[in-house]
Length: 307
Ligand code: MEV
Image 1 (tube, rainbow, N blue to C red):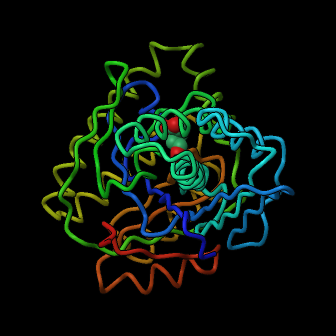
Image 2: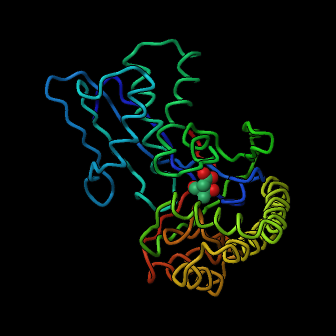
Image 3: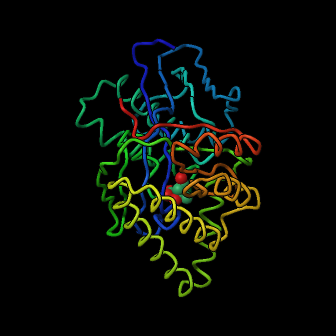
């Protein structure tokens, strides 16, 4: 694609605090260097085409509703515009592909409508939130923040609005392994909500532990104390397992990574399938990647992104 109004959105890696972030606790994430590109153009015979690393995305009811929410926010007719989009991260793997796509399309929509940058920011946020609600149910907004491109950041919504602080984290290689087909984020968020509704007195203290881990994680990340970061990732993974969002494949992959010498490993995103992330020093990184490659697709990124 090379249209003039081509726009970008980034994928994300949640390092600490997924799920608990929906309940106002702190989480830590980083934008990925990759994500989505999209362009819009007026057309008498509109077509929506979205490619991804595995092929072409089916424009099913959910994708249609998610894109329609963006068109509606910008008062644009979906029947008059062609969408040309490309995802450069795997879809439905917990890496924020839906938010990346929504941000890219919303930016392209703002461009086509020709609204000024200040107004555009608010409208893009609104459009992406409406689009994300289709896939996520009750979304915290963390994916959306990463998709707008914020590097490493701490995120919480404890007072009902997002509090975002950038983190100054030294560059490091992060390993991602996609070890299982993904589950629906909305379904996983709902399963945690059901558990929480049934026994808030059991689950709230766990969410407070998620928060404590994320806070300690911020300090360890900024200081580049990678062994501590790994230990905190392992602890965080244990809590995610405790609230029921891990799976045998995710557990096996975390153990594989740790056995191969990773400092830590955890599932990332909504769970129920999808990806784990692992952190290893230079000496063990290749072993960890090779071991994980036997269980799924492996990607690695140096984070934070430099551009
Ligand atoms: C999904 O990437 C992260 C969750 O915490 C949901 C959300 O924060 O919207 C599971």
